[in-house]
Length: 129
Image 1 (cartoon, rainbow, N blue to C red):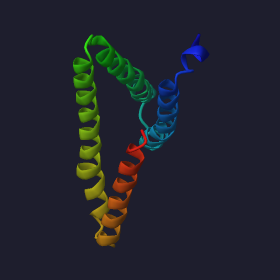
Image 2 (cartoon, rainbow, N blue to C red; image 1 turned 180 degrees about the horizontal axis):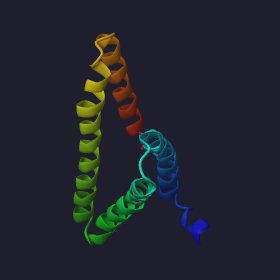
Image 3 (cartoon, rainbow, N blue to C red; image 1 turned 45 degrees about the horizontal axis):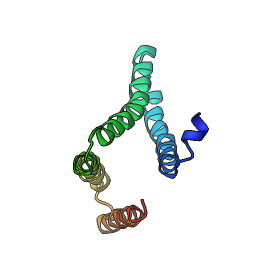
Image 4 (spheres, rainbow, N blue to C red; image 1 turned 120 degrees about the vertical axis):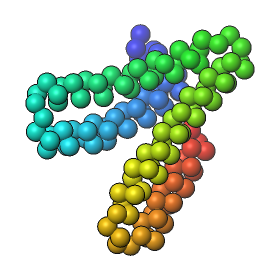
């Protein structure tokens, strides 16, 4: 049943996207947790909590977009979900990543150019998703 359910192109794309992002997400969480030398209970909680967010987010997204009977309510739910995810992407990149990258003062124009290039490539990729 699982393989038959994955036959849909959208589900396959979603699976590939989630697995691709979760690999780097797990690595980005695992390295600081390892070096923080947290107690085992805190480490397990952080890893389980982070691992539970992806299935929970997928479930909320599917429930929100399939709950509406009309196409207008489905489009509205999809627009709200995409807006929230885009807003979090903007916040993380502009408020957390960019200031940290520019903090040492070396090559600020190059860093801003590469940052803008990355944004442009993500926008280009979004045209096909």
